[in-house]
Length: 305
Image (cartoon, rainbow, N blue to C red):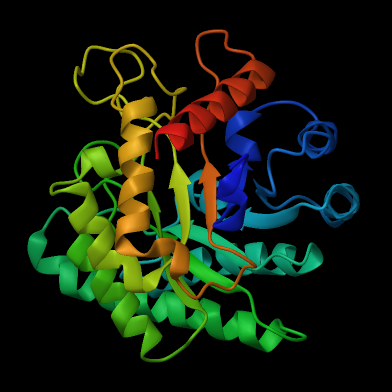
């Protein structure tokens, strides 16, 4: 069937990764004029820009997700900081992303945890802080809602190579979700093909363990085989980049794993489960050609699925 994936998922792209510089309004207009993507994930902008982006996406029939990761990373904030003042600053950063989400009718705000503590004995206290932060943000989203609340989704990152996040190892991601869901309903997890190779364990097993809480997926690439390569780490080059981990065969495996674990049947806050591509131009890459390459990679992979 032609484009049969549309029956199962909404395919999206992370705008601020694919277009790291330039005018976001015109870039999102460019994405909106292409009917391939049904979702665009953006970082928060000032209200006037958010209004323009919403108008474009409304006209194009695209939905919008919010990424709180850039704000947290730029401010060096940690939702699991044991210092209460610093933890609250991180929570306030994500609350700002929730506010931006309501301006554009977003259903999900994605974020990341702070760093894994150097001392393993500190992990329980940092997990307590992370749970507290997530519950506060979810409750804030409920209070601000005029209808269904925005969901907070914590993205699983690596814990030893690049971002070195508390969430993190799959057991900690699941523990976080279980503990937060005991207190609020509008919470879930995001997994990312870019990060799975940097974590121990079998991809399908990790996804199966997290699947009861997965509400959002990312797909991208990383370079970890050789530390001497200049894109070593979590830098999201195009699929098939020399020395990287993921190309079309790995995307095929990822899609098959998502089907196998039942992600596309999960109850989610969006119309359909979302799979968003997160790729960044490097070494003189054109953002527009990168987008075209990503679409071709997905179509080639889906043809094999």
